Image (cartoon, rainbow, N blue to C red; front, top):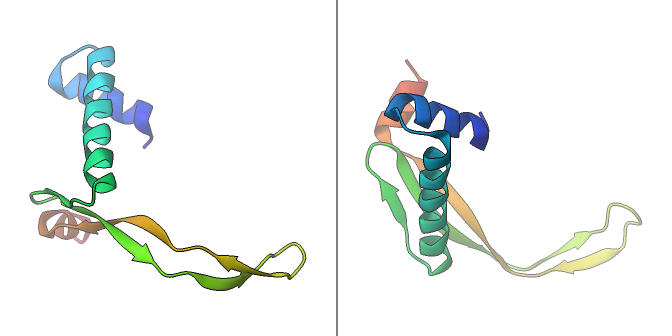
Length: 91
């Protein structure tokens, strides 16, 4: 399922125009992005938690030429599924 599919599903279930559904999805994803960027955790009850994890710098290899490169430290988004989502997947 991609964003267009999600928009269509939301529009049908909420009985709203697709344009409004797309706007709601954009608002939700922007709010999650802003919270994560500022270092906050986002918890959606029974669905899961979005958070940020820090990765340390490390030495890697360029796959094209085998050259050793230094990979800088970075922050990555992490999603941890909630209890209800986990149980729904394993029924």
